[in-house]
Length: 395
Ligand SMILES: Nc1ncnc2c1ncn2[C@@H]1O[C@H](COP(=O)(O)OP(=O)(O)OP(=O)(O)O)[C@@H](O)[C@H]1O
Ligand SMILES: [Mg+2]
Image (cartoon, rainbow, N blue to C red):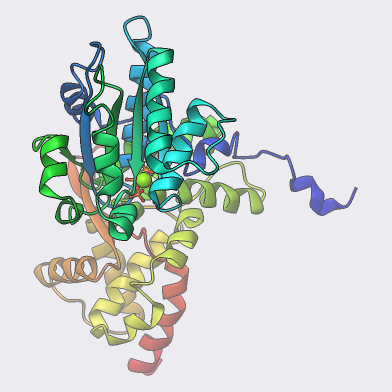
């Protein structure tokens, strides 16, 4: 067998790639208990006969809206099956953006072979109702990215679904979960639809902060990577790197990319560079040429930090100061004082070169500022900085 094929199935770092797919829904969500409680409160009567509940979920990209709705739907389907038969369908209105397409998707979920050809929307709708009532089943429809259909067709589909039981015997056939990235969706919804949905039935998610992303990274790493291949430091760098956008998808992308980079090198463990290589490709905010405009001593400090971060994922601010002095000596420059350096560190952070947090000193000697470089590959900057500094100081 050709040597290069050894890599296939070698599984040095990646145990199972499936949990890293964007569509994978974990058994439980991390850090969204409060939002699940909010949902359960809005749906508190769902297990009673003849009831419906509706909700609108909004939040930025990758804040877990789809995951929240799917986990919730699955949980109520499984946990209350002895009280009320509930099933659900998830429809992404980006792909199904007309009323007939949505209704078709609903009815084929209930009866895959249902002959819908030639039927009007109201005929399909009454068939949906008939099937559900015959099955004595309640149906939860998740209309994801609902803004797409609202922009294209207005509120018609929502009126149709919300009024499915009107003028008929019995209520509570359907419940709706509407999802949209933007709160602008509220402007697209007509007053009558909002009042039918219930004005207070709106759950707002915010983007994840670094801690939230760390917990998500931890959960997915446990499912997809071999135990010994990563540690909290690696997960921390991944979370820091993803935190500029707060999008959980970035975490998955970084774990997979870092694992593949490690495997490509024939290693069994992920190192900071495996992550930095990907984030440096992703984040265009800091291009190597940006360093050209930094003041000379900022460049000296950055060079000192980069040299250490080439080998390690973090450096304390104290070590950065010591290494800066060494670099100053190398370029025959008098080092700036402590206060100025502290300001320089802030400058580098504000310009997205580095990221800082407070943490324990390496040997447990109290707390200190820890600097890392989640968005750039230090070695990319080192060459550029050395070139610049050699030119400026005639070396
Ligand atoms: N709290 C969480 N716990 C575990 N995984 C999560 C959590 N939040 C999000 N994820 C995962 O992150 C990825 C992105 O989440 P999701 O698709 O739900 O985001 P979204 O808000 O629907 O984004 P978009 O606006 O782009 O549709 C999914 O793989 C999801 O499973
Ligand atoms: Mg989504």
